[in-house]
Image (tube, rainbow, N blue to C red; front, side, top):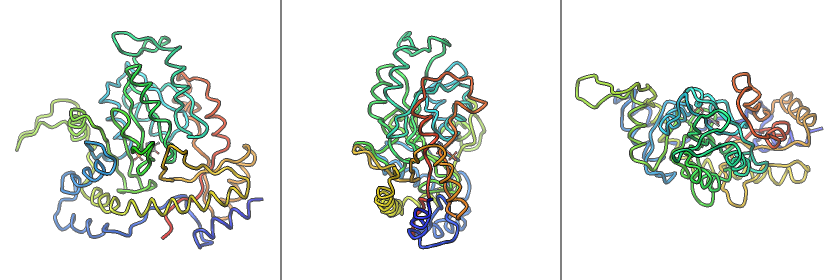
Amino acid sequence: MFEKTIRFIQESYSTTKFLPLHEPVFFGNEKKYINECIDSTFVSSVGKFVDRFEQMVAEYTGAKYAVATVNGTAALHIALKLVGTDENAEVITQPLTFIATCNAISYCNAKPVFVDVDKDTMGLSPKSLKAFLETETVQKNGLCYNKTTGKQITAVVPMHTFGHPCRIDEIAAICDAYNIALVEDAAESLGSYYKGRHTGTFGKIAAFSFNGNKTITTGGGGMIITDDEALAKHAKHLTTTAKVPHSYEYIHDEVGYNYRLPNLNAALGCAQMETLDTILQNKRELAAQYSDFFAKQNIDFVTESPDATANYWLNAILLKDKSKRDLFLKETNDNGVMTRPIWTLMNKLDMFKACQSTDLSNALWLEERVVNIPSGVRL
Ligand SMILES: *Cc1c(COP(=O)(O)O)cnc(C)c1O
């Protein structure tokens, strides 16, 4: 039934061999910088590439500060901790996300609360957020508390699904009104903009991921960005074992983490950042071709909204219903074209089943229909 689609994807990549969903590409200074690292012996947690990589990401996104971390989950964990998330807290997020979002909340010993997503952006719905806050929370001493559990809601964590920005300006305004920190999970959205501003710069703090499957990679890695100098300094401190600077003594003034990004990985990151614009252009060309093709097949292809520029990290289509989706998954994967359904909703997983949630009709609707198709850069 989907032969035409399979053929189109194979022709787009000029191959009939197995097609993965996403692959890293290295066509810049990667080897050169990694060799420099090795020659200098600075392969570990300090070195010029860490500083340079942080500067490059700060500059690219327009954030004042950037702090590199060992992965995106660690970046989110520290970001949530920095805004006061602990065992007495709750964090509002979307059920339609990768597990890392909820893991980071759990590492703070806090509980997620799930609000619905918008169908068009696949990201947290400002409407659903506002409705929950209006009816289910109270303000005490200028802070927001959940009426049912009595716990403080310290953060709202929207996620820019597959690189498509959610309605982040509306979400930011709601967070301001309720005095809740906006922590953007921008793991998937390096190179994505909303109303001309880079994702991750709308709230107090944000996290990026440079895992091997993301738009650019450091092997494994992450980054915290913020405009708040005190938060940035604390982020660096917490991610580097909370060591008090001293030329030889070991004094640590709080429980810190070994969440530093090694210089070796940062070297890869610097080279990847240099090629980011080429990568994005390449991905946008593929997305445009997909968009034309699927329009003719009468299959919905997810495109950027008029307010957004997407990085098209993972391209996504919407099948008519679950049985069509299952058929599509089977036919494509059987023919060496890797496709994948969107994540199982977080509120369905054993660890988060008991968590509070709003009506999640949009998330449920998307869960049955969204499929990712090959999206890697074509060299
Ligand atoms: C990739 C990703 C992360 C972070 O993942 P790491 O593998 O730890 O770098 C966080 N949230 C989302 C939504 C992601 O896709």
